[in-house]
Structure formats: C-alpha cells, structure tokens
Length: 574
Image (cartoon, helix red, strand yellow):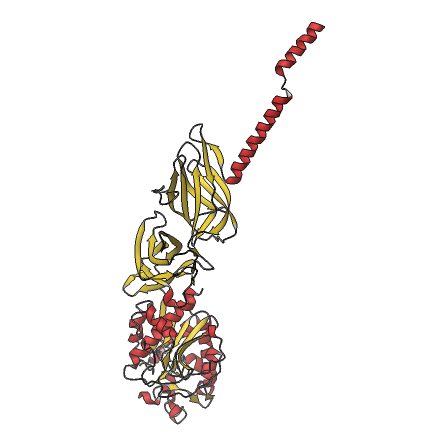
C-alpha cells in the first residue's frame, strides 16, 4: 500500500501546478488582457497577415478638423508595410483620402493612385503618417466623438473613437468653407461655370493669416487640375474673425463642369495648409426669361403680328447682358406667356418684363370676366397669378416706370378701338411714348375702376404709396458698390446719379430689412429696389422718362440687379 501510495504521490507531484506557478500564470493572463485592452482602447489592434506576422496600427490622435478636412495620425507598429484603401467615420465611407505624409512635417508622400482602387495610403514599419480626408455628406462638429475605421487591402479593419477638435490657425465659428455652384456661365468663357467660395474663419495664431490661392483637384486621382491666385489676398490679423459681409467678399472662380475638391490655401508665419470643400459643377445653366410679346396667337384666325406697347421695343439690351450668364428664353407670344404664368417651370430663375409698365394680359382672362366691363377683375386675377409664380422662388423684374400700372391686349384694342377706353391721359399707359392711343391696347383705367394703385397691391400684397418724386438725383447705396465689384462689366452709377425722372412706387418703411434691398434712393425713399414676396423677389427700376441712353441704362440695371438678387438669395443664402 505504501508503495502504491508513494507511486500516486510521485505522479501527483509531477502533474500538478503549484499555487505560486498558478498565481504567476493568472498574473500573466491579466497583464496580457490589460495590454490587449489598452491596445484596443488606443486604437492598436492586431491581426494575422503577411504570413505569420501581425499587422498592427495605432490610431492615436484626435480627429483634427481643418474646414472640410479631417486629419488623423496613424503609426505602423508591425514589421511589414501596411496599405490602407478605405476610411469610414461612424460607419459612413469617407468620400476621399486627400493626402498622406510622414509625420512630423514636412514629410514624405505616402499615398498612390491605382486605377479602379483610388487613393491608397501606405505606411512603412515604424512610421507615423498624417492622413487627410475630405468629408462629404458627413457632419463633423468640434467637441463630438466619432468612430474612425481604417480598412487595409488585406481586409483587416482598425477602429478608434476619436474626439473631434479644430487644430489650425483658423477656428470656424460656423460655416467654415462652402463652395457654391451658381449655375451661371463665366462671361469670359461660356463653357465654364462660376462658383463662389464662402469662407468664415477666426485667426487664433500669433501671426497674420493670409489666404492667397484656390486650388482644384480631381477627387478620384487627387490630381491638381487648376489653381487661381487671389489678386488681393485676404489677410486676417491675430485674434480677428472674418466672414463675408457682401457678395463680392466671396472668392469667385470659374471652372469646367465636374466634381472637384476646392482647396483654399493659407499661410500663417512659417506654416501653411489648406481648407477643403466639395463642389459639383454641373453643365446645366440657369435660365432667364424675357417677356416680349411680338405676336398675338390666341385667335389664330386673325393673328396680329405687331409688337405690344413697351418701353423697350427691342429686348436685345436685356438679352445681350443676360445671356452672358444665363440661357435666355424670349416669351414672344400670348399663348407662351399664359402657359408660363399658369404653369411655371420648376426651380429658381429670372423673369424680366421688357414691356415694363404695360404688362400684356391674355385675351382669355378678359373674356372670362366679360371683357371691358370686368376689366378690373381680370387684371386682379392675372396679377395674382404672377404673384404666385414669384412666390415660388423667382426674381421678377419691372425695368422702368410704375410697376403693374397697366395692362395691354392688342386684340381688345382692335375690337373696341378708342370708344371702349376712358378718356383723358389714362387712355394709354404712357401717353408720352408716342404709341397710338386707339391701337396701343394699353390702359390703366376703365369703367370698371382704376387699377393704377391696386396693381401693385395685387401683385405684391403691399400698399401703394407713390410720392411723385420727379427730376431727382438718386443716391446709390453700398449694394451698388458691391454689385459693381461682383460684375466688373456693370459699371452702374455710384454716388449721386445725374438727373433722373423717377419715384418710389410704394412705401416700404414697414418692410423688414431682410425682405428688401434698396439700390438707389432719393430723400430716404427707394427708387430702385427689390422686395421679397413669399419665396421670391420683385425688382423695381422706378425710372420715368430717362435720358436717351435709357434703354441701355435700364437694361443694365434690370439685368445686373436681377442676377445680384438671384445670387444673394437663391445661391449663397440657401
């Protein structure tokens, strides 16, 4: 028994683990788990790759924000080169890897382009690389934590929750950098489109911050496809905040249609960098419509091929200016006009009524209300239709005179002759124009009552308030200076203009500032201005009997001011 027992004891001593050894093993396991957890918490993960050697990457920085950029630091702790082909933030794919260089700067390039794969970042063993990505459809706000994922060409993924913070000479109170595609042609090269770059920054370093160049990159290959030096670099002193105050403060460039990374480059002391944003520059051009009725086709059995009464008997001055920026469509017959007002095309665009005061009205509207006896109701309905069109997000411009003062229909003028119209100077809308009072077809009064004052109210919803300002010298506002800086070919009069006959068409003192834009005024009263109605704008060029160059002058004002309003409220202030 003792030998048997001794045998058992001897076997037990050889196989058992002593308490000391067990403790050592437990401690080792705990340390291993702690190290693994630390690696996981710090973004360092291991995976078996490249044979039997582990792939180890450490993502150990914050998520640094530079406008549309984000930057992270990644270190290769393994013994083999690692290739990163994709990045994700909060599970969403980062649009593009923009750059990768060894850290600290200035570093060596660590990215390459492969057809079909895009930009691939490579990190040699022991290297730390600074990776820059450009975001699109992802919101990265300072002070928020986001999960960043790196995907390697071998299929391994590395995750890390990073705290987002701004790290640059520029802080972004809001807005940062945004590139706006205007949909307008470049007047110097119609094949290109204008883009406006909005930049809002605060210089938080100790040197002057200078923004001096805009670069364009192919987002797939990261190839630079163009750049423009700013003629007057933007300089921001230490501690100062800057944002555009006017439309001309935006950085304006032109480029061919396509998708681009727009990089605004800066210098601050001995350092420099960029701020990126995406812009998709489409080939489509915004449309502008010019109402100029030259044929009345509502009754094809008796087509009248005569121009309607108008201040501008030739719409070409408008077309010449507008077609530099827009695709211009002339509405030349009554059927087109009726369909356009009743079924307006979608989107934002400009409409210029080249007839100005005598707005053409379709015969169908007059017929529906009993002809001349229901003239007032017809005009009201027609003006309210126009108001609906404008409220949907369009710019409607009246180039001269009283807006919505009267209406014109040649067929009714032919039917009724002189006898149907009331007597006096109200027979025609502009008795000084030389139009025949019997066949001109323009009227502001009938037996149904005056539409002189109510025309404005029907179209805009605002009360009429004519002050009768004549022979004035209007003073330009800062909006004219800004407009001239945006459109170098405008050259609208600044300061106090030469003698104009003009007036304000109604009192806008009660209209909130964000719903009006005054370009010229006389005695504190608006002469040329824009008013917001619903989601759109009316532009009124309230000049009467201007000098011989009136056609060109009012055409320039109507065209450039219309484009200015369009850009300000339908492009930049979305």
